[in-house]
Length: 416
Image (tube, rainbow, N blue to C red; front, side, top):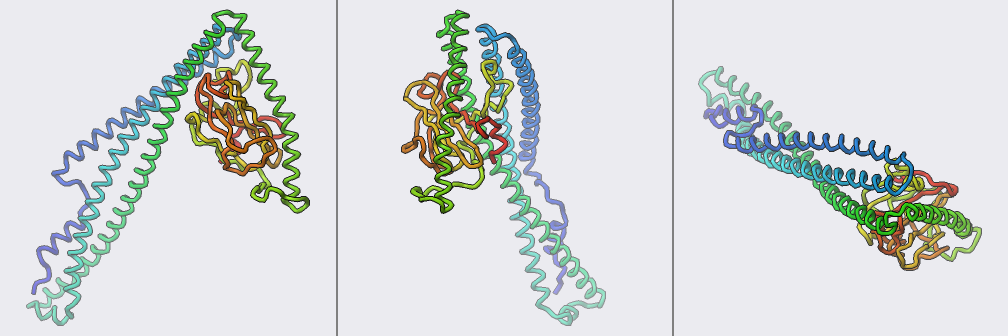
């Protein structure tokens, strides 16, 4: 019996070869090349859009430094509209890029899967050959060969095949690992694409809201500078009144919080057994969404009225808002009108959170009511002219503020 068979030699050559696309897969390679070219083109376009956005933001900063009047405010709004339109284009570009990358990964995964299957088949066949050889004693193998030289060559070949078999197993392991990594990346890209689709929708809503705000502003002031200045004064007075109310009512709620803390530690009677107050402030996100305005954002279109002392998280109108941490409700300001509506909760370590532009209040949420982290307290609002939106909103979002000892601080310093 001759053990150096043609099939064994072919298998050994295949196992030693570097995995590559077959000749009839040239169309697949061409498709990959086209995808790579499209991805690079999209990246280049995205870089160009980023440069435009940066230029527009610099222009907006310049506009923000001009004297506050109706004309300059309309110019600020127009410049911000241009920024939003460009960011929408950029987000759409990013979605297209992710789609191309997903197609690319799908081809890679299909190719690697085929290579894995081929490698398994090759190894299975070689295992069978090796198994058959191992079933014979060296004496039996020697008796099937006419010379000692042939016997030595067979043993040497078998050892070589064993070495290549080990390498083939390692190659298979590497292919499986690559396959898993590609599948993980594919899953991440698909999730990112979904998030970008949501972001695109939010930005489009924000753009429509900002255009609507400009229209409403022009209607309200009727191109009269005096009316505009009176409107600004009224809005600033309203903002001052909101801050004063928050400061006063926070003290009352903190008294309730202190009583609950004593009850929890055994120095009082706890009538709220389902309420657990943490010893430190560790907030969660009140809602999942896109941050459209940062803390003290230099591009905030109302910055000349006052600083933006919170972050704006854009989310669909009516989305539930969760308590960022356990605490006691200090303020519920909601009367069903378009006036600014909000909820304030006080927490441990002298922290408090405010949820602004709410379109509704959750059941049983009222002053001095304890709430647990993650409990729904209100609902996202902010579409211009809708319930609870107030005068400083151009789209659906929550104005999320964090206060420490009554002073606004950047929420991003505390959110996970």
